[in-house]
Image (cartoon, rainbow, N blue to C red; front, side):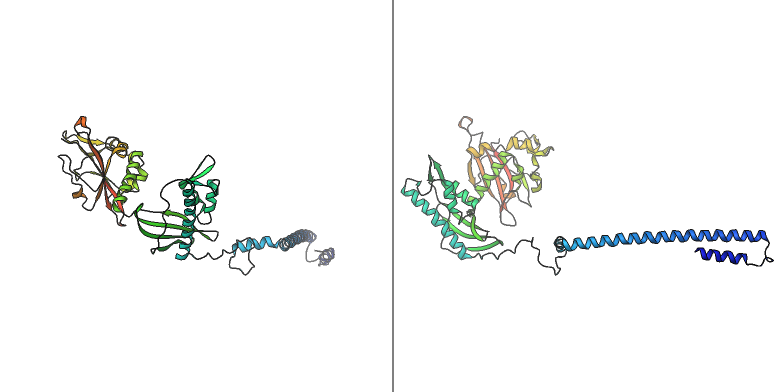
Length: 405
């Protein structure tokens, strides 16, 4: 309230008719009115202060916005990068930090496979011819590293290194070829080309070779920096007897090393693995599932594996104790006669392996008994295989055989 308004109100109070109120009442009313006036003025002052504060705050906000948008204009590329990274579908220009688009990979086909394998064969045979004319010495290159480098236009670096290590040696500052059968080459027969990944293909050709036998020759090709290179060559044997013998050898080595993790890879996924201390397999024989094999030797439980011949006592052992007593593989690997699917009954215990596993094939590691013991210390480990749903031979039983009363 202004000073003029205050004076006007006071004058109006003085002009009130005196006969209406006595002096005491007039003074009381005057005091109340003055109190009201003072309170009103205080409120007005507070309101004025608030308006000033709000005006100051608005100024600060406006200044901050100006600074922010100025920074955005100056450093716009930073903000745009962030926006682009979150809004891939926006209409903004391309992000310069992105990798350039990948070129279309050159096509791989049978013609490309023929081209690469022919180059590989020609290069290797040139070294073989040179070595033949110089007593196995390579004169055109001074080291294995130089020979390896010559292969890298056709082979991957890893495969080139393995080929050079396999076929060449250095001696007295010279390089020599190692005299042995050379690599397997594609013949003029047809082969199949199969895509594994966009940058990986395999070429497969069935072959009969005097040195390799009946094999499935498999060349692996890989695209590196838009160049197709040979990355690996495999020659798995298709002769069933050879396959079984090679698989059995690998299994015996895992048993010898007590490597149950790798052993589990050979076990039949549905039938598991049966153990029998004698060639007559009981219906109660111990069987472990494939997924139990990896941790087999950590099993502390005792199992009833069968009964000792002649004594009738229970063969109650832990798995580790059973392996130590019945499956000591080292001597069989070293001196055993390997018989593929050629079971014989050598004692007075019936061999019922084919009755229990009628679709099976066996690989037996047989140790003949010594003369001083009249052959009574003969013993065998027989690995029993059956095909799984994929047609692969898988281990279903490990059976022991030996002299019985």
